[in-house]
Length: 313
Image (cartoon, rainbow, N blue to C red):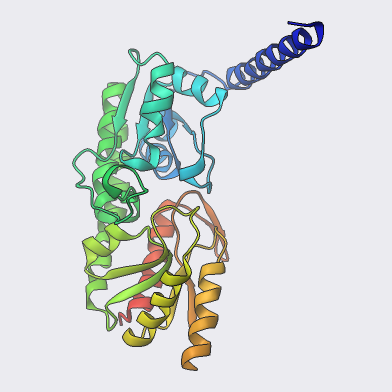
């Protein structure tokens, strides 16, 4: 090894050490105030932990809010936070399979509770063989019926980690459970629409469609970082013409190019006006016209758009 190569190696090692030191310092600056440290893989689970845990928990989401789940990779500070957690919550399925394959093997798992919040939830296929084993649809949290099960699992996990807070958690879980139960009952009316299905930019609403009796047709499949094929776009336009579907649902957090293309193409081919409505993947709080919309707010907003898209009176 010549002198130049040696200097490059030393420089690379120094950079890695500096980055690790910065990550440790960043995480170390977070106050250890005696609260239960909860690490959730992404927003819906972090929301549930905060709603149920209240002042007795400190919650961190590994995936930044409103980020694409499928392309995210854990950084050194994420490993450190997971290592220091008392409770780790994950969704199960392919959405956050990286937790068990990339994070857990590198941390001390014996002193913490690691909980799959979809225990008791039956997975369905998303029809996309590129999305995890067998094309499993990971988007359970978008259906209030499935979210009820996940919230119960979060509640039980918090009681196990902090039994002294069980009474406090029970009261707060009851409030969240009532909100989700009410939404579940209201979503049941989606099967009464005049239209059989919805056109959506990202086919993430398979559980909602399955649980509440309608069909979804996506411009792209389960992963939001895909690109729509020309063949699929043509099929969707023909389907919209045949079924009389004149509404397109798009997540406002992501690029709405799919909805815009479908809107323009259908209006050009049919001469009919097409409406584009918002529907949320609920991967982070969202600032709407009424203010800050949290997870439950977004499920409620989705219901309004789904009713309009399906022709529910």
